[in-house]
Amino acid sequence: MSSLPHPNVPNWLKEAKAAIKDLGAQNAKIYWADFLLSIGVGYTFAFFFFQLPGLSITRIACFIPAAFLIFRASSFAHEIVHLPPGELKAFRVVWDLLCGVFLLFPSFAYSHHLDHHRCDSYGTDRDGEYLPFGSEPPTTILYFFMMTLVWPLLVIVRFLILTPLSFLYPPLRRWLLTRFSSFGIANFRHTLAITPATPLRYWAFLDFACFARTWTPVVLVTMGKMEWTRIALMYLMAVTILTLNFVRTLCLHMYINRNEEMSYFGQLRDSITLPNNVMIAEWFIPLGLRYHALHHMFPQLPYHALGEAHRRLMATLPAGSDYHGTVRPSIWFVLCQLFKNSWASKQAEVRNAAPGDA
Image: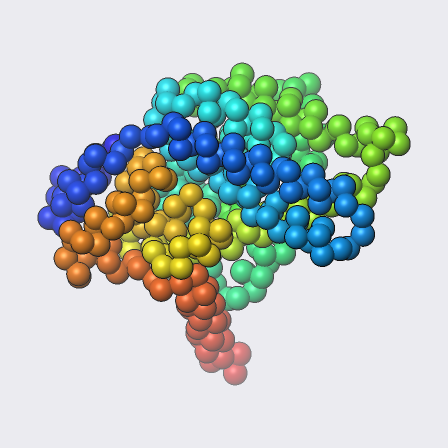
């Protein structure tokens, strides 16, 4: 587990680190069992969803668990990004082959997430997952919600056309990796840094695999081996999973920072903890991300340890600690507060503009 961000830390944060110091090890059995069960059952429901005819109750009953379980399986990309170097190597590769490539969401598409944890980039243009939704008019939230309809089409263009061209024209390859390989739901201005440690050969392998995955249904439809409606159903599944991911994103932070660097404690106060309604919260914010403030305190803490870590901190830390201040009662409360802040921002914008318009 990484050390605390600077030496002048408050006593309560030192107590927090001491309280969870034995929870930092990844349990490979939990990772494998959770992922394989989620992806296996999710794909099974998806198979029946694709095969059943018409708009039946049975088909809808297959679609809903398929979307939620595949969404859960895809969320392991977050865990993979935070795994220490050398840990669970086989898990990374299997996740990419069974989930990342199939969903056109290879692990490199989430590598930008580490910028979200750095004090010099969190909440700024260098953060691929943050926009000030709480400080912008509600139309901003609506715009990015509507982008869930467009994003699958952009990803298809990326792998279907731009990927092969990038290997034929090297300057395009560099642009593709830095500007169109961060599949963040929010900040499209983010630039992915390519360093000497970047596994470019593995990324190229994943790119080729996604290229083949994208072309396969096109070829099958052209040959008459697959109905074109199957592609429409795949698009519906993709949009649903992206919508679930967007809802999850809105529940993780207050989103009130306007492109200013935030300290470690500023990030903590801007993050949210949702310990209640476990079943509902885990469906919409899977793999323990509902303990998001805790995750920002200790990013390398494995997801299966976050619940126990939260219980220890609530019992150990003083009631007035910053961590206690991150607790919210429900997902609905968080979303309502976000829209309330967003609407207040819109009203303030109108009031500030009024004198100049007179």
